[in-house]
Length: 234
Image (cartoon, rainbow, N blue to C red; front, side, top):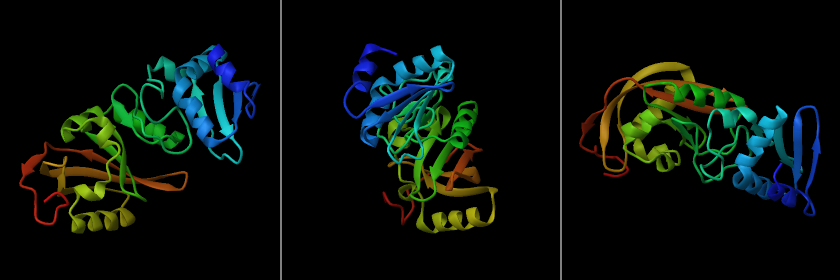
């Protein structure tokens, strides 16, 4: 582990230990843990690779520690300090963009179930997005979706999607998601603040660690239309 990280760990309130699984770090607060992950993500990933284990950062009463694995470096994942939100598994929300080659995410906590879907999205040639159901925030998109939306990943992965749906269509979507786990639907939606289109999308509802998400995979080329009455940007 680098001297810069060791200097942080040797400050009052920090603790760390080695085990058969790797390195466990106890930070004074969640903010300190997040700061360490964002500023030294590349170093921690390199350490995990060298010890063939993982580096875990936790804090008092933390249920979901931030974790770095050696394969992140092998997969050429940008470190949190360069990108945005997520190491392999982490806690809380951030403001940066974590990218894995062709996929982007703005949520700091990435449990295994989301990680698998993120990897699958990076390998899908169709536009894919994942939206958190409780607040309708789009948190994951692949490069194809970024291109389709004509939006920078940093902007697209922080979007609250209520602004890009007609209220009646969004209500119908939520109703169908409660009753059907997977379906295909053609509707009118906003690609960005200036462009709306007719979209045909396969939607899928899924749950990870008690939180519901919806994944959308666009199946056809969007057909631009005038911004409809009732749209947020109309």
